[in-house]
Length: 95
Image (cartoon, rainbow, N blue to C red):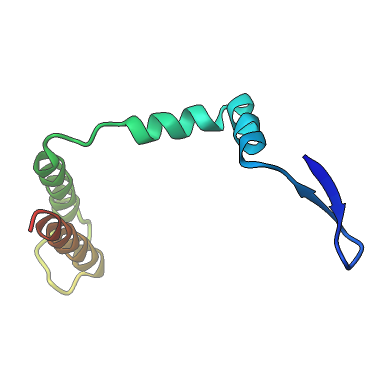
């Protein structure tokens, strides 16, 4: 690690990738990043998607304004848009 002066007179730290990785290991960043990268993908993403959609539908049914029955209800309309977006992402992923 070196401290150098720039043309404007400011100090600048210069370090190698290895030095930066050592700092990350000591601070615990590298371990966390390593674990996140090793997390296996969900073997049943469609089940997770179905669970998310069912939860959103329950939220629509519990809507205090319209009980999920009005297409004009803004909160239900937003939930419906989120459901459609999840379905689109899932179909794009598996296409």
